[in-house]
Length: 77
Image (tube, rainbow, N blue to C red):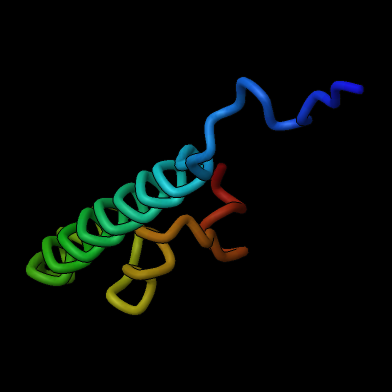
């Protein structure tokens, strides 16, 4: 009697697509973080008048960069 293996014709290597997906997600997260840090640094270098022209105060810089709009900001939209 002949038996057929369920793994016949399949690769014995583990799937690496999950690894590459996780690696790509990590790279995107790193680049996103670096870009946001750069934006925060640039906005912190502006004077208060320039920030007021944009519509934010110095204490709202991180919220504006990370997209966490406060109630004071959304009432004008």
